[in-house]
Structure formats: structure tokens, C-alpha cells
Length: 496
Ligand code: ADQ
Image (cartoon, rainbow, N blue to C red):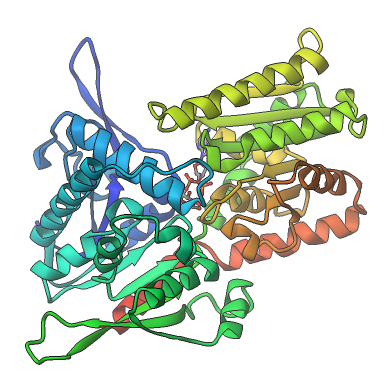
């Protein structure tokens, strides 16, 4: 097949499962923010999605579910066990992930991982070059595929390439640690448009390029602030800088091509989340859930991947501090923490899980009653309907990430409260904090700051609190995932 519109991402939006007894193969939707964000866009454009099917057993195109079954044309790129260890767990998640999240844990720089990263990126680029039709638009996603735009441009000068980074881009000082910084930047600059969630990330990227001698020009920052706060139409995407790079397609000496660098804050399918929250089954489930949790005065919740960037431990320690100091009474509070298993073979992720579980059991040991734990902790994924029921009945949502590109959970929570109920405690280190400015902001590196944000959420005048939620609800309704994708794609189209 060939496609005019191609999304290239590390993961396909489906996972292959093989029944161990019958050998029967089935496909299930795969979890994660990126999939949540892009599925509706692809369906609307009848495009193809290129990615890894989620298992290290080889999969052919014939093995894939049909477009009728999955709603998408899915093209597999296989990863074997070594690719998984070195490209995915290694360079992507033990080098770039911690480097880009400001060294919450130390990044590891391993030459063999880098070489494997190059090889796998080449495989993605080759598959894309074979699928993209003449003049196609290709949208490459995220830190696992930094080199794909450059590799693709070498093979296919005719196509229009976008690159979007879903996680933060670190400041120039930190990024310079990366032994392969030049290669990563050059690969990314194969794109026509490079997008970030926040001005900070875009600026860090431009500063890094400037420091390394690239020809960078920047646009007006005041415009950027207005756009991010949602006071301008979402269709008006915001380009904050331009980079002139050598144009390999032109034989003329000194010929350059312009790469636009912009801010495109991702969002959610706001209408769908709202509809889900208002569905009678969800409302009934929310009601029952609250009763099962003992109908507490305050229900505090967290919903995250089990990742050290999410600050799960920090929020639990803050709750414990509030209980220890008597500022919250144990009989008034129930906490639900849902944490999906993530990257479990990496030591730092195992350590995070252990620390979280130790604190959960300490709080329950000190403050729980028989048949009534104070913290309800779930270490597996939940169906989205259950997550939304939890959002709907939660009084105070705790989003305390130490660093997060955007954080869709914060937006999903807001979208689930069209009546203005609820309260959001939000880390100022999330991309979401640039848009959901009416949240109770906290600095998760300072436990007392989380405590104060929780206490403010329990004590503010109800009318003022409702207004905060309604303002944020409007922001999320007016800036949904469709407008995010449309603004990026419009920018890309303009470069054609
Ligand atoms: P993530 O780090 O995965 O995304 P986030 O943006 O919060 O984080 O998205 C998580 C998604 O998974 C949400 O849609 C949420 O509902 C779902 N989810 C979380 N826990 C779940 C559970 N236990 N069961 C079921 N579903 C669960 C990365 C970046 C973010 C960026 C997104 C999108 O790290 O900063 O916002 O990509 O760009």
C-alpha cells in the first residue's frame, strides 16, 4: 500500500497477544498518552500508522488486523529482543528519558545502545520511505525516533516531514551531556516543522542549536504566552523560531532550507471524555465507587504510569505529612492511587515501585482501619470508563509530576467535571500548568508546597473553586486534540 498521510511512532496503537495454550493471535488497543491523542486524527485522515506491534516475535503485514478491524492501516516495524533492550529500554528510556526529564535519575550513556538506536531508526525510516506516496505528509513522533526525519529526507526529498516531541526538551547545558548530541539534532532537523508542548522546550531546543553554532532566528515571545494560555484561536499555531540548515537537495553551494520550530500543546478528545463522564453508567459507577470507598469527605486520587517522573511518592509523602501533623484527619480522607506498570525491567522503575509501595503500606499501617485502608493502591491498568468514573467522583486530583511534557491526566480530570465540581492540584513542572493556570499549583520538589496546595483545595470558597474548574473546563473544551493536530498539520502543509 502507499499512503498520503503517515504517522510514525515507536508503538502501533494495537498490541499483539498470543494465547499460550491455543496459539491464537488477538489484537488489543495499547495504552499511553500518544495513542490516546492520535487515534482520532488518523481515523479522520484515513492514513497509515507505522510502529512496533509491542511483541518481540516477528510480525508481517499480513498478520496485522485489517483497517476494518482496527480502524487504521497499521504497518509493523519489528524489534527483536536486543532491539528492545538496547534501543527501547536502553537508549530511549535509560538515556534520553532521564536526560530530558532533568536528570531525576542519572542517564546512562552506552555506545552499543546508541548504535542500536541508529539501526532501529534506519529501519523505521526505510519502512516509511517505502509506504509514503509521492509528496506525502509524514508525522514522526517522539524521542525514540529523533533520527527518522533526517534519514527519511536523505531517501525522499519529495515528502513533507513533521517531528513532535511529547516529552520536555532539556536546557542546553543538560543536553550537551549527550555524546551524540550533534547526530540527534541533525536527525531532528530533517523535519520541516519541529513541535513541542511548551515555550520552554522550544526555547531550550533553539538555545541548544544556537550554542552549537546553528543559524537560528526567534519570533515574538509575547505572542507565544497568549497562545499557550488559550486566548488565541487554536488553529493559529505558533512558530517561535526558525533554523536555517544546509539543503542537501540543492546542488547550489550555500543553499539552505528553513526548519520551523513551534509550540503545539497537546490535548485530549475533550468532548468524548465529557460524554463518558456524563453517561448514566459512569455516573452510577462513580456513585458506587464512592460508596465502596466509604463515602469519604475528601477523595484524593492519582492516575499515572508507574514512573519516577510522575512524583507519586512525593504526593503520598505529602498526604502522610498532612496526617502526621493533624492538618488532615484520617477519618476524612481516602486516597486512590492507580499506577499502570511501566518499563518494569529497568532498575529505577523497580525502585520507584518499591518506594511507593512502602509508603502506601506505612500510611495504611498507621492510619487505616480494618476493612478501611486509607490508600487504595492499584498497580495495573483500568478500562478508561473506570478511570473516568474515578475522575468524576474525585474531589481533589493530584498531578504532582517532577517533570512532564504535558500530562493528559490533568486535562482528562478537568474534562470530566463540566459542572465545575472538583479541584486540581497541579505541578508547575508539567506542560499542563502553562494552560490550566487556575489549578492549585505546587512545586513537587517541596513537600510542604504539595501540602499547601491540597489544603487550599479543601478550604477555598466553593464559588471561587467552581469558577476555577469552569475556567479550566472551557480551556480544555476549546483546545482539544483535534485542534492540536490540525494546527500542527496546517503548519506542515504551509511548508509544502
Ligand atoms: P505519559 O507519560 O504516558 O505521556 P499522560 O500524558 O498523563 O502521560 O498520559 C497518560 C494516559 O494514560 C492518559 O490518557 C491516562 O488516562 C492513561 N492512563 C494512565 N494510567 C492509567 C491506568 N492505570 N489505566 C488506564 N489508563 C491509564 C507522554 C508524556 C506526557 C504527554 C503525553 C502526550 O510523558 O507528558 O502529555 O505523552 O504527549
